[in-house]
Image 1 (cartoon, rainbow, N blue to C red):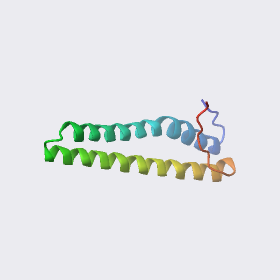
Image 2: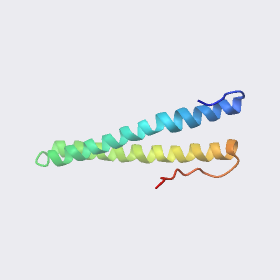
Image 3: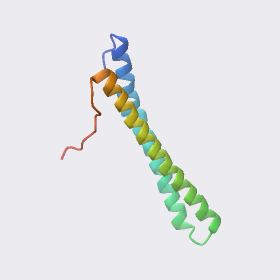
Image 4: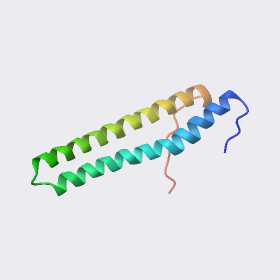
Length: 96
């Protein structure tokens, strides 16, 4: 865990470890599952117009949810980077 000796370190700990590393990936996963469920309903119920419309709605709101969460992630990273880390946006990279 992270040491919390000052208010600044407490805020960094909450934002970095709780929000960005625990809660945020879980919420993105839920939005992605919602989108996939919409795709599944859309394909499975190809003959039923009402079910296809419901599948389209689920896909739409899944994409909207993903977009909003990625934008919030970028804003939080920008604010934390500006006020606490001293500049720049942290962009996670995949190690190959």
